[in-house]
Amino acid sequence: MFESLSEKLQNITSKMRGKARVSESDIKEMMREIRMALLEADVNYGVVKEFVADMTEKCKGADVQESFTPGQQIVKIVRDSLTELLGGEEGEEKLKVSDTGFNIIILYGLQGAGKTTTAAKLAKLLKENGKKPMVVSVDVHRPAAAQQLKVLSDAVGVDCYIDPEEKDAVKIAKDGEGKARYMLCNYLIIDTAGRTVADEELMEELRDIAAAVNPTEKLLVVDAMIGQEAVNVAQLFEQNIGMDGFIMTKLDGDARGGAALSIRKLTNKPIKYICTGEKVEAIEKFYPQRMADRILGMGDVVSLIEKAQANIDEEEARKAMERMMGSSFNLDDLYSQFEQMKKMGSLKDLVGMMPGAAGKISDEDLDDKIVDRQMAIITSMTKRERRTPSILNASRRKRIAAGAGVQVSDVNKLITQYEQTAKIMKQFSNGKGGFKMPKGFAKQAAKMGLKGGMGNMGGMGGLGNMGGMSGLGSGMPQGLGSFRAPKEDSDDSPFVSSGRRDRKKKRKGRR
Image (cartoon, rainbow, N blue to C red):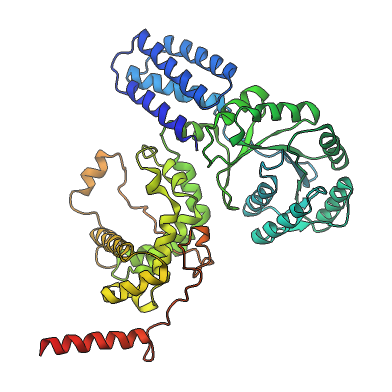
């Protein structure tokens, strides 16, 4: 997200970071570049003008702290100002909670903003936090919307109320509320109808629904890809219905991201959640300071850790680390790591959370289809091949490549990657499944600021429910869908027979 803006701001701040002295002309030039970067990112002109003017005054009047060089102090001011623009340092804006314990959230938005998918994502997030949510579709203008919500809610394991025969949106909302209360749910998420334009008919319907159910929270779902138009949409909904905050969607797209930087300032309403993909897991709370750090290339280690904790089973991680540190690390373990990496989000998002990594790796190398292809290759192997990669001779690799719909060179690359990983892990192993520090590593770690070494290093054990080919998604290589994995090696397996023929040829050659 914010790739273009992030790259430009990182280039600007990196020039200042090492400066021992900062002149007024340096500040003026930096502000000019920041102004251009923000305008190119489609940030509102008025917001940019005020933001740059405020930051200029702070830079000119800044007292340099002992722990910072003047250049570092300027970078800190940029970071703090960006954090303030996004919402301040107080942390995430939490959902309002009703005194009765029963909460109703209404999702508004234009057609195509992603309300229906967002309703399921938010319900999943609430469920993971120990709540009992229900979703209801009141979109009587697009029958497929109700069915879509039902499919998504079933996928995330939450209750859903729809009434395809009823054409009164207000009645569906009230019936849904009654159903949720009867089932002792503590959250009801109402997915409303959208329009290509916010006309008076839509506004009247939304006002009637809000009056009927008295929502705890009214959230506007905004498509980040519509640029400054998002601000106009937000102001229109605020004037006609009122709202408590935003959920920004499609931040993983090619949008310049200006809407997210403008919308808080111009409406004085917080961004509460962001969605960074189509998967139901692709939603997270919005933290202004963390987002500012990501934009400036400082990473977001806290969010990265939270993603790992939410998606990786601790016991499985421990077992995986023991296998990796021992001598039993095989391609099944590598496949398990790929699974978990996919569960945590896109490669681009994960790299963006690593300090200093953003912009250092090309988009081609961060294509999730690369991981899908590697998983497909492993899936095309027999159990014996996955557990004993040393038996993968040329004929086996050729068969695996054909089954996965890839080139033999792709199979070779995967095997090389596995061998390199196994070799690295052996350097950290004490031979008993435990951890040891390689010679000279402690000094290198200290130079990098890694206090305490790597004692808390966790494994990437399996996540259980994503077995076989399910979960490889749309990135599955062509031809894999119709491919049936070979039978496991056994006495009557054709692959064992092939192996026996290979051994016979070798014996004849020795004679």
